Length: 220
Ligand SMILES: *Cc1c(COP(=O)(O)O)cnc(C)c1O
Image (cartoon, rainbow, N blue to C red):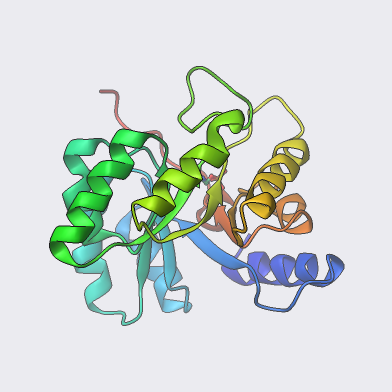
């Protein structure tokens, strides 16, 4: 698929869902992709990108950004507390706020620096033990806690279990967001972004459908 194909599929999904054109933001997930491929997508006009590792993003985005004004980079992978400061300087949004300790750290650094990226709270909708995210039944309290810390909470994020129908998870995430008055929904990837848009996604995270398959990272 080309970037243009994905954009037109997003536009069709918006229309089918009765949603305004342009209401869904495409995050092009550039993790592990060679720089020249990322430059190609930048040259086609894409400006919002997703990375899942702080180190990898720190190594490539300062250079990549230089030639292209208006780029924003979103962190979509887990964030260790000891990398929070670096992540806050590097990213325009963090989609993976998933625990009280990280919330407290982000809030403290935001106080100190006067700057905080947009924040999405990750919800472990499938309650998978190996997956990050706050449990659905704890989400309301955690959202309130993050707001109490003055964090700029834009919405919620989920990664559905691979072997389940994602729509059930998208609907659950949308329900938790609605009852908490949150409008942002970061959900949907290459294989299911149209279903996510039908259920209210505002941010879809699409990697392989744009860039082609990822070369597997070296072990370790
Ligand atoms: C890699 C990744 C994506 C993109 O996945 P594709 O299937 O390549 O579209 C989306 N979200 C997260 C959290 C990811 O780690």
